[in-house]
Figure: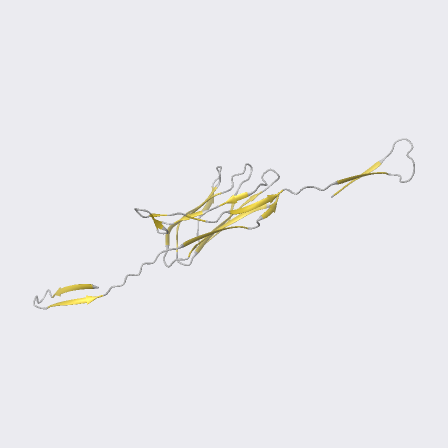
Length: 193
């Protein structure tokens, strides 16, 4: 409740009192981050692909939203940036460990941003890959004293990479079946899986 005393500038004898209520609605963001693996179990030679999505479920904009993701650090595995949505500007660093980072961006209420990264596996880079991303905004999840923005982590997501094992059989037979070999013997070798 606010009370104001008023007096006319033109006629100082005109005075009065006014009462009123002012309602201030404070809106704020509520960021959620989800990280998914395109395929949770892959084979050597398949791409490993993660997608990170940040959604503002709040009633106000999330200011200077920054997404970062330190990608699985496996020697010989090189991560590449794929699709990026929601107006985000993202890049994957060239240095090890590689980091996906998206420039500060205001994410309006109800909007999302996402980024996808992939790396081609081979026999030496085919390993289990666990990963977690983090998002932070200037006005989201404030805590502490003084109030500071707290990072919001995704759940840890894992890609399993299997190296297929060959199941080979070698069969050796005499080329001339049923007859004793004279001189040199020829064999046919057939390898099957």
